[in-house]
Amino acid sequence: MKGRKPFEAAAREAYEEAGLRGAVGKRPIGFYLYQKRLRNLDTVLCQVKVFPLEVRKQLKDFPEARQRDLRWFTPVEAAEAVSEPGLAALIRAASRT
Image 1 (cartoon, rainbow, N blue to C red):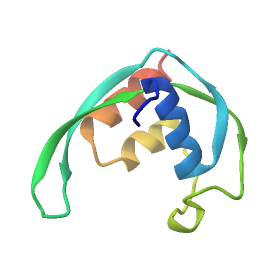
Image 2 (image 1 turned 45 degrees about the vertical axis):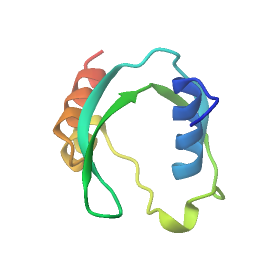
Image 3 (image 1 turned 60 degrees about the vertical axis):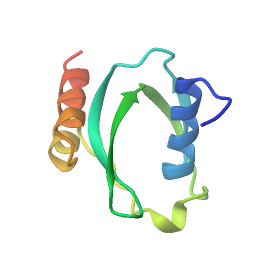
């Protein structure tokens, strides 16, 4: 997000996509790589930095509410549910700390 620090962009995404509000860490817990598919079906390699968020509130109304089916997971369940191996590894590592 242009004009925002990475941790601010992460907090904004958490709000837009899941209605989450809370305290975001300024340092990433790690990163992972994935192939993002573009509209023209090409792919581009992306690096995603993952920031911790201490959730204090979940809003019922948020920008992408009608596009999302929200569920809460344990760390083990979350690691099993995601499709990106790098993200799964980060979730497992974070749950051990």
